[in-house]
Amino acid sequence: MSIQNTRGVPLAKKPLVEKLDVLSAHSPSHTHTMSNPNIPQKSPIVKKMPAGTYWWCACGLSKDQPLCDGSHKGSGIAPKKVELTEEQTVAWCGCKHSADGAFCDGSHKGL
Image (cartoon, rainbow, N blue to C red; front, side):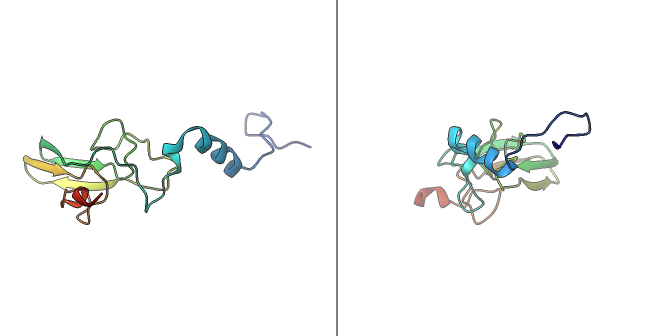
């Protein structure tokens, strides 16, 4: 008897973890862990931002830096919610190592 999804399609017999290992072998950027995010750049990303709610990319995999585009899925790293109450120029952390979360604290200088 084979295992099937709700549409009756047989599922692969290998565990999902093995599938992820195969994926990460071909795509190293998906092997990062919470203590080892991808470093998209070693300087802040300075942008004038209107007031609003933003999701800062913490994994470094987003193509829409410094904001999340969903690329973190499967990385073990979740984006960080940032709420700006007024328009301001923000120095977003581009190295993903800031002790100040989404905001640059100069940590990139030591990388």
